[in-house]
Amino acid sequence: MGYNCSSYGCGSRGFLTKEEKIELLEEYQEQLEKEAQGVKERIAELKENN
Image (tube, rainbow, N blue to C red; front, top):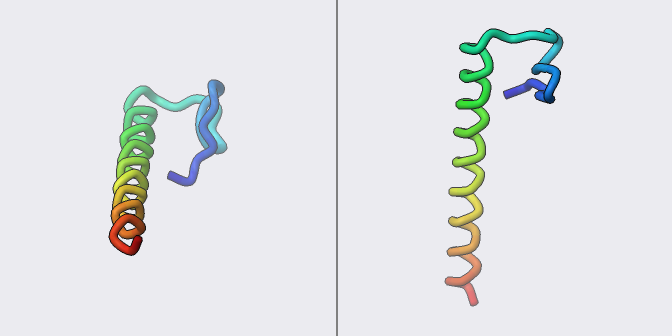
């Protein structure tokens, strides 16, 4: 994502359009989903090796 999001906006601009906010949030959601999948895979690996 590369942006620092807060209640005041994201990145170096103070105000984003609704479409920009949606796009950033969708990108963030995708990153979180990938991270969650990685965690699930790691847990499965640890359980197999025990």
